[in-house]
Picture (spheres, rainbow, N blue to C red):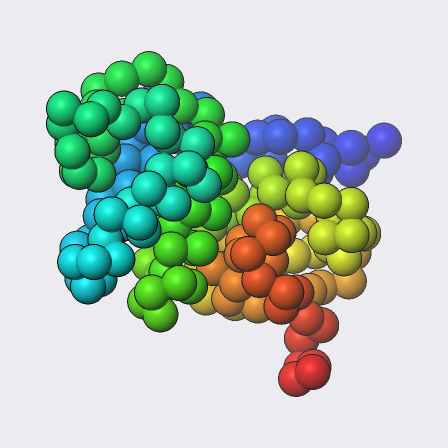
Length: 180
């Protein structure tokens, strides 16, 4: 019973200011929408509207977009000032962003806190075959400084792990030292 405390959340942490801890993901969702707007702005003009429409659909943000206020930056401002957004909304937005960057050949830029939160969420909600890959393992981002789970280690870049769990990529995290 002495090591039960290791498994309780926050039980072994040093006391500190946790006033910034929240389940509201509006700011992170807004940042991803702004990043998507940048990718779309760099695309050829004839593709931009299709890319924006596809992004809105994939991110499940079409109901938040208004025709009288075009552009993702206006949507980002509305999301930032609007209702609370949870991890599910953030995961949909990150998935849409990853699909967008894949279509345009752009490199995705997602903060480590976002990739970690989305990967953890997706590890519990992904389709069964993807959950089975990470079940019983410690999943570790080699570049973002986060990990979750227990068991043998599977690792990869944080964005790659999130993309796999969000069903955007077919490249799973791997055992350390394994190249295939």
